[in-house]
Length: 289
Image 1 (cartoon, rainbow, N blue to C red):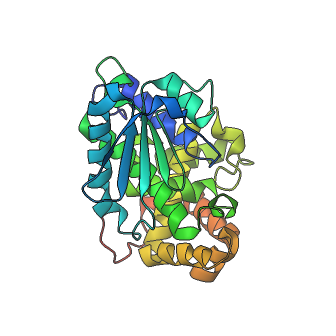
Image 2 (cartoon, rainbow, N blue to C red; image 1 turned 90 degrees about the horizontal axis):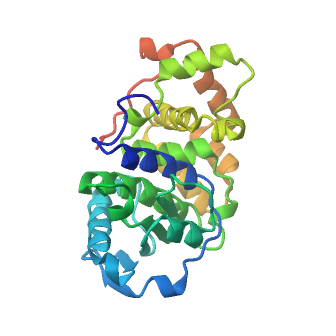
């Protein structure tokens, strides 16, 4: 994380929210311990049901508020097909147990097709989390759930071969999180230093040691996609996947070139520093948040 990119003045919260993005990158099976969540509330929108331990009612209310406030921004891509259950667990240990991911002290949330696990915001750090910080987290996480729902069903969403740059790029773009990541100039310098590196198509080698770079690449690759082809092209990719195609075929059908060719275009754009003049990144005529 670059200096000055944290959320407000809460350093622990900033680190946790940044790193949770790594946790939601790869969809996996998870199961919350049934005994931990004994109370529930329904959102005004009817699209969210929040489950929580009785001692976390205030946390649950903040999370549910964030989810409802995320809806208008999510709907730029489409509407949730099924309600999402927000599972607010008491602390970090409970979150790791729920999602079966241990040893990741920075994890704060985990998304799936129709559920999002969230560590109680009051336990994120000494001062807890603010509502804006929770709002940003939920918008990012719910973008994942919306993406999965718009591209598949409950049984098939994990088999669509959606690459990390698209998954995390769409979530970061929707939540307007570019301020968190390395800049395009820093990505260009990385490519100069390590000409064999391919953080778009082969991010796994960088994932643990330089997640800031990986998520910055994802954010800017998705931004490149939107500004060159428009937001309707993204919706077209999701529709093609919903119709039965996996991501590579859906991308080529909706965009008119392969995903591999697109990633090469983006990499050239960064290497040649097209962002300095903007010549390779025309602004699409689509509304932004």
